[in-house]
Length: 388
Image (cartoon, rainbow, N blue to C red; front, side, top):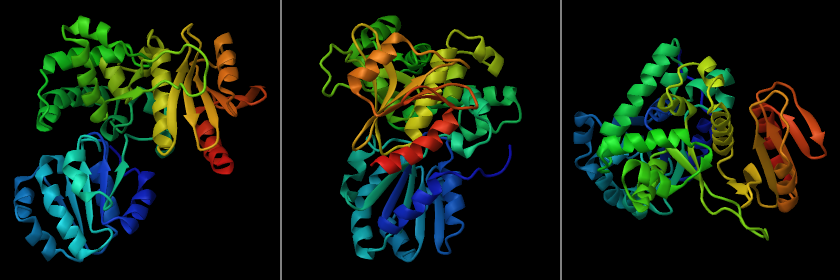
């Protein structure tokens, strides 16, 4: 593996440390939270890092008041905060007493919602950031990123065999160690079957009853399990767009396995050639594009749009003043369906893009551009800034 890959989150982290007494970086295990935090605080003169998975470091904060008092002028980084959630109740008086922004940086593998009860006492004092696996703007090889996914040890592995081995182990560890470590008691065999089935329907509508019947649990249990997978950053449930549209629309969310490397491991896809030959290649491409865009623009609102008769737009982006549409096509000469054009009329979007595995960019109609993922991100960054 090569050295440190600079993350886009770094600039935002510095801004948050200037504004909030406590900053939390959340994200899935092994996505680079610890590495990024260590890189940032290495350039901060007065800083200290503790890994709460290490017993010796946990012992240091047994009396958190005493520890923080001895580091009153330092930035203290507490990694794997979900291992010690009871510490939150003691932090508010410490934070208020010291009155210093950028005093505490906490890292966690559980989502903001899972940690909500523990962190309620820090309301108004804490800023949340989410670190994802690698974004396309952070690495050089988009094809490798799509195939291997964005977890650093998978993307940076020496070869495909090592990358596949890492992802298989990651899946096993998540099921057998990470979820139980968060206090979530789900039989690993049940969740393994559910997660594998999620891979087969990534980028499709979620049918909880059908999934429940397949693995022998109720649809309400499936929904609870899906919420856990979403809360731990493994899947995304994308909601349908409904506002001001006078048509019968689907109500179920679309399901995505968030990292395509994990998706491919669950589908037993070992290489890029395997991927291109798979009947799931189109769904994988949509999963990759949707996840990259949502992660690149986290402050915006995202949906999909589908009518009851099947006309669909893969991704609807809602900004303060406008709607934009994205269609994902795994083709070098993509041709949108008739339903796509009907959906554009329904929503009256300002502009739309068809994102395909190509290098160039061209218009097929006024306001409709075929382009690559990288070109879209660069263009939309400017479009969004100029239009809002």
